Image (cartoon, rainbow, N blue to C red; front, side, top):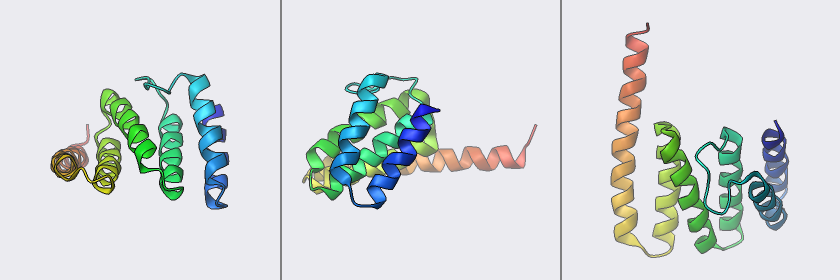
Length: 133
């Protein structure tokens, strides 16, 4: 519940261009929640969304290095949770951060994995829709 309110507040700050404040408040909340600095596998959906808001705000302020670190933490959390659609989205963000920092081969390899994850996730969703139980 609290993480949802924090997420909504950070989105308001992001939309108003208060990127630095959104980063500071979001990081402080996630530190107290135990999600940062290394991530925790039982992070809530809104904790992950808060990480993504902070990541975008860091990119807006021209700090792709920190955004990359945060995207890697987010990727680890989502990977442990096994949400393939969210994993594909987070993986795509991480690949673009690596690309911006000149890590071309790493970005290419990650994009290839993201495509496979996306295909598998979509196939799973389609099979579930075709064969409801």
